[in-house]
Amino acid sequence: MTLTRSGSEHVIRVDGQHLMSSRMHGSEEALAALACERARALPRPSVLVGGLGMGFTLRATLDLLPPDATVVVVELLPAVVVWNRSLLGDLAGHPLGDPRVEVEVADVAATLRASAGRFDAVLLDVDNGPSAFTASDNDGLYDDQGLAAARAALTPGGVLAVWSAKDDRRFQQRLRRAGFRVEVRQARGHLNKGPRHTIFVGHNQSV
Image (cartoon, rainbow, N blue to C red; front, side):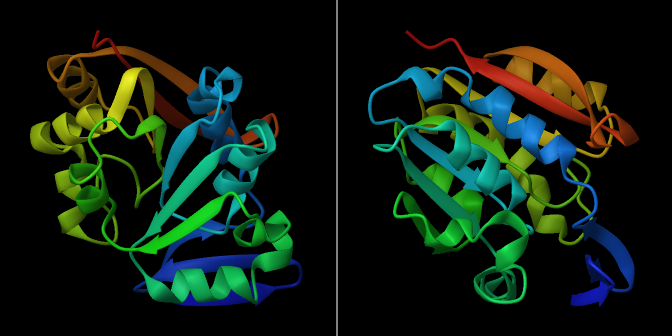
């Protein structure tokens, strides 16, 4: 994995393939808005952000939540955390410096399995969405067992929001099979232009 810069644009590549760019983060901000619509009105909301990226999802989440919120950021790759504390920090206004943030360098699937009823919202911006790009192990986040763990980690009425590079009808079916009420939204990569990305929103209907 490499981080490169061309002018004002930063790009992260994996094995030479483009993974993310600082130039396009509109859909990451849409992910936060959809995930936190309910949580932002709760007292002391607890939110998990799976995948740090360049910090844009985390920044949008923090901007939506109240001062008494807790946001747990889980990132598998230590280098990504280091870059966000240094080279990438200015891009999203140094969100890791916010006192509401707790950082875990870990597998988000393991965090979900260990967090029954902990979160009012879970945002997953990991890899390329349900179709893994950088690590096949990420498939476990999005299979039946992974979705069951995500639902168990939510409070009643909690929201799971998943960023994806494309729509995936089989993933929609898995979400419903796991007990979620499902919405599928489209968002542009950059303001009102750029590639269309998909955000899956699953509402935990537990009582």
